[in-house]
Image 1 (cartoon, rainbow, N blue to C red):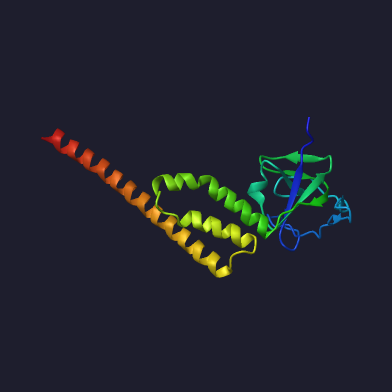
Image 2 (tube, rainbow, N blue to C red; image 1 turned 120 degrees about the vertical axis):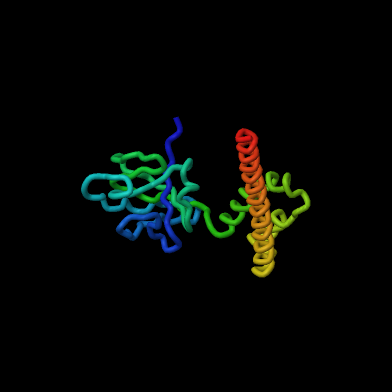
Length: 194
């Protein structure tokens, strides 16, 4: 059986960012010259009763990592004493094992992959509207330093307009359907009343 992997997500300053009332200074892992990692020190043990969202060190697994994304991601090792929740665990202590390769470029490329995956749904209804596809292409170019901030902003604005246009189309269609349903009911009311 494969060992469960856990992750700690921190903000750009390597501080906890998803709640909690303390901001520990995390003992960060260091990357060695050969590319391997030396783990950070074990964090001081949490005192008192472990409780999700209240007391202890919180980690998530790969299945729920998307829900917690922020600036930095570390693979982490929890202490043996832990409580599991739906999308996280809380443990008595933890150490960070290695920093995961997550930065603005990778986050942007990941967002492009996600957008590209649902693009066929949009293009099915709007086959001639290339604004979303163009925005994804420009975002990929920007991630690799081949597009400017201005080009990215223009593509983003065009894609936002496309989404707004599609939302208005959907809202109008829903309003027409609701109105049609009301008119049909009203017609039946008149027909039954004679």
